[in-house]
Amino acid sequence: MSLPYPGMNFSAFATLTDTQLDQIVANIEALAAGTGLNANVLNSGDIDWTAATGKVWWEELGRTTLAAPSTTMSLSFAAKKYLRLLIGVVTASSNSFTMRLNGDSATNYASFFSIPGGSSGGSVNQTTWDLNGVIGGGGLVALDIFNPSGSIKAGWSISATGTPSAAAAPTPLFNFNKWIASAQATSLVLTAGSNLSAGSEIIMLGHN
Image (cartoon, rainbow, N blue to C red; front, side, top):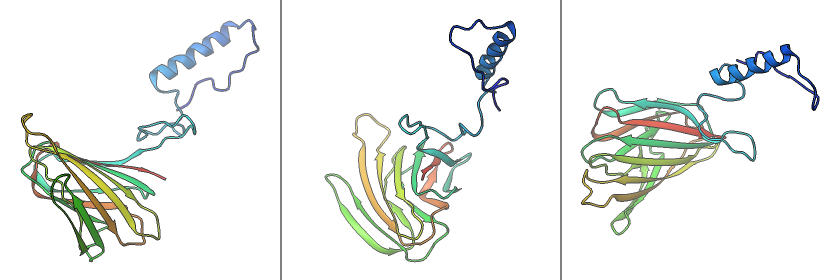
Protein backbone atom coordinates (compact mmCIF):
# COMPACT_ATOMS: atom_id res chain seq x y z
CA MET A 1 0.00 0.00 0.00
CA SER A 2 1.16 3.53 -0.71
CA LEU A 3 -0.17 6.96 -1.51
CA PRO A 4 -1.60 7.26 -5.03
CA TYR A 5 0.48 10.41 -5.52
CA PRO A 6 3.60 10.13 -3.34
CA GLY A 7 6.39 12.73 -3.25
CA MET A 8 4.23 15.78 -3.93
CA ASN A 9 6.22 19.00 -3.61
CA PHE A 10 4.93 22.56 -3.77
CA SER A 11 6.52 25.98 -3.47
CA ALA A 12 5.34 28.23 -0.66
CA PHE A 13 2.35 30.42 -1.59
CA ALA A 14 2.11 28.81 -5.02
CA THR A 15 -1.30 28.59 -6.65
CA LEU A 16 -2.30 24.95 -6.97
CA THR A 17 -3.84 23.65 -10.15
CA ASP A 18 -7.07 21.67 -10.22
CA THR A 19 -5.04 18.51 -10.92
CA GLN A 20 -2.80 19.09 -7.90
CA LEU A 21 -5.83 19.71 -5.68
CA ASP A 22 -7.41 16.48 -6.94
CA GLN A 23 -4.18 14.61 -6.13
CA ILE A 24 -4.08 16.01 -2.59
CA VAL A 25 -7.68 14.94 -2.03
CA ALA A 26 -6.86 11.46 -3.37
CA ASN A 27 -3.93 11.16 -0.94
CA ILE A 28 -6.10 12.24 2.01
CA GLU A 29 -8.82 9.75 1.06
CA ALA A 30 -6.22 6.97 0.81
CA LEU A 31 -4.92 7.76 4.31
CA ALA A 32 -8.46 7.83 5.71
CA ALA A 33 -9.20 4.44 4.12
CA GLY A 34 -5.93 2.95 5.41
CA THR A 35 -4.71 2.16 1.91
CA GLY A 36 -2.12 4.95 1.87
CA LEU A 37 0.11 3.40 4.54
CA ASN A 38 3.26 1.66 3.37
CA ALA A 39 3.51 -1.86 4.82
CA ASN A 40 7.23 -1.28 5.43
CA VAL A 41 6.46 1.63 7.76
CA LEU A 42 3.84 0.13 10.07
CA ASN A 43 3.37 -3.54 10.98
CA SER A 44 0.14 -5.04 12.24
CA GLY A 45 1.94 -6.28 15.36
CA ASP A 46 3.33 -2.88 16.37
CA ILE A 47 1.74 -1.78 19.65
CA ASP A 48 3.90 1.13 20.77
CA TRP A 49 5.80 4.01 19.26
CA THR A 50 9.00 5.63 20.48
CA ALA A 51 9.01 9.24 19.33
CA ALA A 52 12.72 9.72 20.02
CA THR A 53 13.78 6.98 17.60
CA GLY A 54 10.81 6.78 15.29
CA LYS A 55 10.76 3.03 15.87
CA VAL A 56 8.39 0.68 17.66
CA TRP A 57 9.30 -1.07 20.92
CA TRP A 58 7.14 -4.04 21.90
CA GLU A 59 5.83 -5.97 18.93
CA GLU A 60 3.29 -8.76 19.25
CA LEU A 61 4.95 -11.99 18.16
CA GLY A 62 1.97 -14.29 18.62
CA ARG A 63 -0.87 -15.37 20.85
CA THR A 64 -2.87 -18.45 21.76
CA THR A 65 -6.45 -18.17 23.03
CA LEU A 66 -8.29 -21.18 24.42
CA ALA A 67 -11.51 -22.04 22.62
CA ALA A 68 -12.26 -24.73 25.23
CA PRO A 69 -10.95 -25.47 28.74
CA SER A 70 -7.44 -26.93 28.78
CA THR A 71 -4.41 -27.32 31.02
CA THR A 72 -1.89 -26.45 28.29
CA MET A 73 -1.20 -23.63 25.86
CA SER A 74 1.64 -23.55 23.33
CA LEU A 75 3.12 -20.85 21.16
CA SER A 76 5.90 -20.38 18.58
CA PHE A 77 7.44 -16.95 17.99
CA ALA A 78 10.34 -15.15 16.33
CA ALA A 79 13.66 -14.93 18.18
CA LYS A 80 14.00 -11.58 20.00
CA LYS A 81 16.50 -10.43 22.62
CA TYR A 82 13.75 -9.14 24.93
CA LEU A 83 10.51 -11.04 25.52
CA ARG A 84 7.38 -10.30 27.52
CA LEU A 85 4.83 -13.05 28.07
CA LEU A 86 1.34 -12.13 29.27
CA ILE A 87 -0.82 -14.91 30.74
CA GLY A 88 -4.45 -13.89 31.09
CA VAL A 89 -6.68 -16.30 33.00
CA VAL A 90 -10.43 -15.75 32.75
CA THR A 91 -11.47 -18.18 35.49
CA ALA A 92 -9.82 -21.22 37.01
CA SER A 93 -9.33 -23.03 40.26
CA SER A 94 -6.00 -22.40 42.00
CA ASN A 95 -3.16 -22.89 39.55
CA SER A 96 0.58 -22.91 39.41
CA PHE A 97 2.21 -22.86 35.99
CA THR A 98 5.23 -24.60 34.56
CA MET A 99 6.79 -23.74 31.22
CA ARG A 100 9.24 -25.36 28.85
CA LEU A 101 11.16 -23.35 26.28
CA ASN A 102 12.13 -24.86 22.92
CA GLY A 103 10.89 -28.24 24.18
CA ASP A 104 13.80 -28.49 26.65
CA SER A 105 12.94 -31.07 29.34
CA ALA A 106 16.48 -31.43 30.77
CA THR A 107 17.48 -30.11 34.20
CA ASN A 108 18.37 -26.69 32.82
CA TYR A 109 16.06 -24.48 34.88
CA ALA A 110 16.26 -22.84 38.31
CA SER A 111 13.77 -20.61 40.12
CA PHE A 112 13.02 -18.54 43.21
CA PHE A 113 9.60 -17.30 44.36
CA SER A 114 8.51 -14.77 46.95
CA ILE A 115 5.10 -13.90 48.36
CA PRO A 116 5.17 -10.47 50.07
CA GLY A 117 4.50 -11.04 53.75
CA GLY A 118 4.50 -14.78 53.17
CA SER A 119 6.76 -17.63 52.14
CA SER A 120 9.66 -17.77 49.70
CA GLY A 121 12.00 -20.42 48.37
CA GLY A 122 14.14 -21.60 45.50
CA SER A 123 14.62 -24.73 43.41
CA VAL A 124 17.55 -25.81 41.25
CA ASN A 125 18.20 -28.34 38.48
CA GLN A 126 14.55 -28.31 37.43
CA THR A 127 13.07 -29.65 34.21
CA THR A 128 10.64 -26.69 33.85
CA TRP A 129 10.50 -22.92 34.24
CA ASP A 130 8.21 -22.58 37.28
CA LEU A 131 5.66 -19.77 37.65
CA ASN A 132 4.21 -20.22 41.11
CA GLY A 133 1.36 -17.80 40.53
CA VAL A 134 -1.83 -18.97 42.20
CA ILE A 135 -4.81 -17.88 40.13
CA GLY A 136 -8.04 -18.15 42.11
CA GLY A 137 -10.95 -17.16 39.91
CA GLY A 138 -8.77 -15.40 37.33
CA GLY A 139 -5.79 -13.11 37.08
CA LEU A 140 -2.75 -11.92 35.16
CA VAL A 141 0.88 -13.03 35.03
CA ALA A 142 3.45 -10.79 33.33
CA LEU A 143 6.85 -12.37 32.61
CA ASP A 144 9.91 -10.56 31.21
CA ILE A 145 12.81 -12.59 29.78
CA PHE A 146 16.27 -11.52 28.60
CA ASN A 147 16.71 -13.85 25.64
CA PRO A 148 20.19 -13.35 24.11
CA SER A 149 21.92 -15.87 21.88
CA GLY A 150 24.82 -17.76 23.45
CA SER A 151 24.04 -16.98 27.09
CA ILE A 152 21.67 -17.94 29.90
CA LYS A 153 18.10 -16.66 29.77
CA ALA A 154 17.03 -14.79 32.90
CA GLY A 155 13.59 -13.51 33.76
CA TRP A 156 11.22 -12.34 36.42
CA SER A 157 7.44 -12.26 36.71
CA ILE A 158 4.69 -10.84 38.86
CA SER A 159 1.26 -12.38 39.34
CA ALA A 160 -1.89 -10.47 40.29
CA THR A 161 -4.25 -13.09 41.63
CA GLY A 162 -7.03 -13.70 44.07
CA THR A 163 -10.53 -14.99 44.68
CA PRO A 164 -13.42 -13.48 42.67
CA SER A 165 -14.52 -11.21 45.50
CA ALA A 166 -13.83 -7.55 46.34
CA ALA A 167 -13.89 -8.56 50.02
CA ALA A 168 -10.39 -10.07 49.63
CA ALA A 169 -7.27 -8.18 48.53
CA PRO A 170 -5.33 -9.47 45.50
CA THR A 171 -2.37 -11.74 46.23
CA PRO A 172 0.91 -10.56 44.61
CA LEU A 173 3.61 -13.12 43.89
CA PHE A 174 7.08 -12.71 42.39
CA ASN A 175 9.11 -15.31 40.49
CA PHE A 176 12.75 -15.14 39.39
CA ASN A 177 13.99 -17.71 36.89
CA LYS A 178 16.83 -18.74 34.63
CA TRP A 179 17.20 -21.20 31.79
CA ILE A 180 20.63 -22.52 30.86
CA ALA A 181 20.69 -22.68 27.06
CA SER A 182 22.65 -21.16 24.19
CA ALA A 183 19.86 -20.91 21.62
CA GLN A 184 17.30 -18.14 21.85
CA ALA A 185 13.83 -19.19 22.93
CA THR A 186 11.42 -19.43 19.98
CA SER A 187 8.65 -21.65 21.40
CA LEU A 188 7.00 -22.50 24.68
CA VAL A 189 4.52 -24.90 26.24
CA LEU A 190 2.71 -23.61 29.33
CA THR A 191 1.08 -26.15 31.64
CA ALA A 192 -1.38 -25.32 34.42
CA GLY A 193 -2.23 -27.38 37.47
CA SER A 194 -5.90 -27.54 36.45
CA ASN A 195 -8.09 -26.53 33.53
CA LEU A 196 -8.04 -22.92 32.38
CA SER A 197 -11.36 -21.62 31.12
CA ALA A 198 -12.09 -20.80 27.50
CA GLY A 199 -10.95 -17.28 26.68
CA SER A 200 -7.76 -17.57 28.73
CA GLU A 201 -4.76 -16.71 26.59
CA ILE A 202 -1.05 -16.16 26.31
CA ILE A 203 0.48 -13.27 24.34
CA MET A 204 4.17 -12.96 23.49
CA LEU A 205 5.71 -9.56 22.86
CA GLY A 206 9.29 -9.01 21.71
CA HIS A 207 11.98 -6.50 20.83
CA ASN A 208 15.65 -6.50 19.83
